[in-house]
Image 1 (spheres, one colour):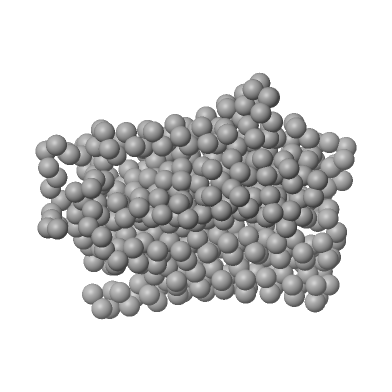
Image 2 (tube, helix red, strand yellow; image 1 turned 30 degrees about the vertical axis):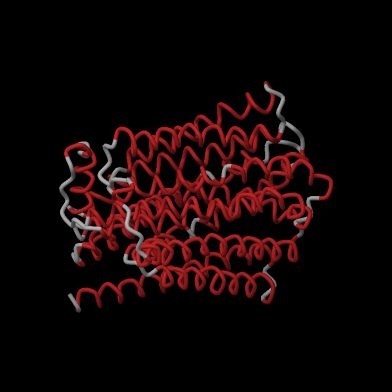
Amino acid sequence: MKINNSQDTPPSVKPRKGSTEGIALLMGDPKKAIIKLSGPMIIAMFLMSTYNIVNAIWVAGLGSNALAAVGFVTPLFMILIGLSNGLGAGVASVISRRIGAKDKAGADNAAVHALLLVLILSAIFTIPLILLTGPIVRLFGAGETAGLATAYGQVVFLGMVLLLFTNIAYAILRAEGDAKRAMYVMGASSVLNMVLDPLLIYTAGMGIAGAAWGMIVSLVMVSGVLLYWFFIRKDTYVTISYKAFSWDRKTVRDILGVGLPASVEFFLMSILAIFINGLLVATAGTDAVAVYTAGWRVVFFAIIPMIAISTAVISVAGAAFGARKFTNIRTAHTFSVTLGIAIALVTSAITYIFARQIAGIFTYSPESAHLGPEIAAFLAIMCFFYPFIPPGVMSGSIFQATGKGMTSLVMTVLRNLVFIAVFAYLIGIVLGYGEHGVWWGIVAGDILGGIVSFVWARIYISRLLANA
């Protein structure tokens, strides 16, 4: 098949003005690109996080067993989320690099390969997951909630292909600099979910399964919009068509070379959470886990802007790498870390000042009121955690953008399973500082992990510049 490396497109598949502007944005000033690409992602991720909380509130109305049932399915669901987000990182990295190299045909081909991977993975895992939902949740200790967990989980896993497709489609849009449209559909999915959940759970009488069907229906509608943009309107820069496809093992290796390690990173974070929970139970009992669980929801909200910026860095640095503009990679790294730290410092100040009021959100009932002071103390300690997140995640994004997914994975292993886990154990258990020691261990590991990641990335960028 003849490969055309120009950026010209046939008149019948002419990209809209916005998509060509997106390419110009990627290839221009890295600072401007990071700001414009991360802004819509921050909004979309805030909406998605809000949905997760609202969903839990609606399910809680069915009783504690229903809420627990969702909890037993969550570890498996998070693995799916990690897989879809990881593959999205791989797709964004490959496509943005090829756009930077002015290889539009290569970018188109990569997008088709990505969709084929969605179909293959869905075909392999969907039916086994549906059939094994019951045994798996029982293995997790679901007990009397196993029936509810199975009813919820089977519907969730039925939508695996939709979950993978939408995340890959978002990645393609981000890779071509079109973060706004990715924001529109991500936000629409979250809002639609929030509206559908109470209707299906209570009005339609579907119970816990209604929460899962709400997700499925919203994904179907959003997928319809994405398919319309790609296959009917055809106004994206990247063209997805049979004519654009030519099987290439290297393309698959490039996508999976970043995507699989990125997916494993999500899995490792789940392992760390399980380990931290174990330390907290050993030092202070289940109340400590409740404090950590509630407090970590606030932490996740606080780091959303940093995650969004790091997602933008993958596209920007990937395009710069493809174009061999290595100074732009250095600029993107420096600016993203600086911007992230600035946001983290503001977040830390706000969290510290309003720690007691934030804790009150989770302790409004008489049964949970006694947790308030400890949640406030946890949030105050986490103020030292936030500023060292940007050096770590932005550096990881640089390696993902340049196709070095395994390096990013090694950095995550060091930060989570070595530094944080070891310091939490040493300060909390060995030195006997209890649950507060575990929290300080998380901070200490994060600080060391952030510094190591930053230095590693700077050395790598320096080598790129030296060999240019």
